[in-house]
Amino acid sequence: MSVYLDKSQKNIDAADKLINTHKIYIPSIHCSYYSCLQVIIHILYKIEGWDYSQIKAECERAEHGSHVAMTKIIKEKIMRDSNNYSFANSVDSNIGKLKELRQNADYWDKVHSDGEWEAKSKAALSLAKGFINKLYENIINKKK
Image 1: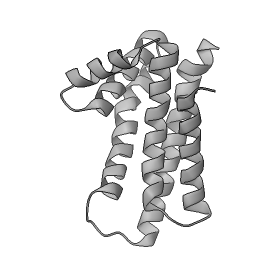
Image 2: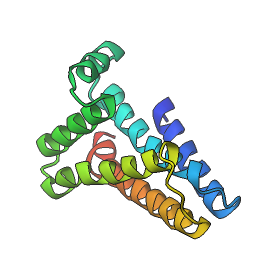
Image 3: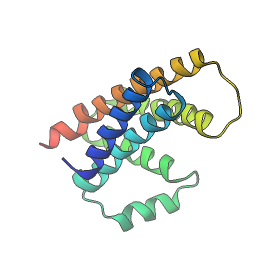
């Protein structure tokens, strides 16, 4: 297993434990979001054969940051290689929803009840797991 897939799995496991064992909801959203980006990084390095300088250059060209750049690259790859246009078109919304939840949890001062944070954290974890499973189905497992 690559270091990025390992990190991704550890973030998913951490999110699950934070939510279901420890009832600590806010940081679990951060874990769910970054687990998806780590799978994307794995795909760029291990499947596409990119090196750090290529990823850095693409991210520097992006007008809206590295996460947007990586999301765009992976969306284009899905469309090019798997012809799963439905999944490709859902990439922006999946990552967008996760990013919004993460930003709300990490930065904004809006107050939510524990019940609201629990629902948001469970939604983020479910979304991340679903997105990662689709990445495995459409890209990772096809390269094995």
